[in-house]
Length: 136
Image 1 (cartoon, rainbow, N blue to C red):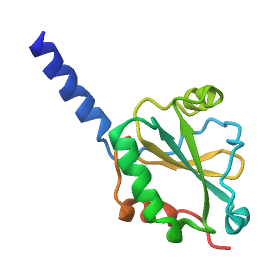
Image 2 (image 1 turned 180 degrees about the horizontal axis):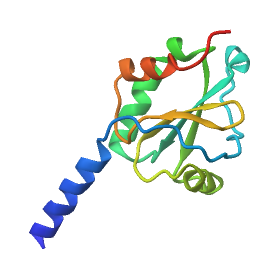
Image 3 (image 1 turned 45 degrees about the vertical axis):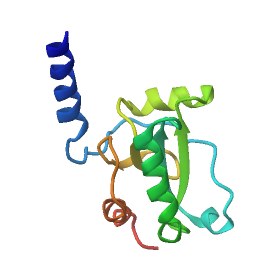
């Protein structure tokens, strides 16, 4: 039993820490809820944050995003998608989310631009993701 658990843990670690995944070509509907910051209303992209609010890594990633609020303000609308919100379940399926936390950059219509691999990402990695947003 312990051997099976160790093998499962190794598989999850290997596949959960892969490099950035390319954008998928499927189309999804845009997440409808947004934060209420007025300067974010001009943003043309969404930073969709798939989380389990009770999970330690998800809380760590949320803290990093909160600390980055000045960098994100006006560039993206942050849209948390939570495991404990029934209406959010269809978004997990639509985007094919299998690991948490996952951060995904999407255009205003919800079309995926790029996603980061599941796991906690440093602020520098998220800033690099934001460079994919066209100027203007």
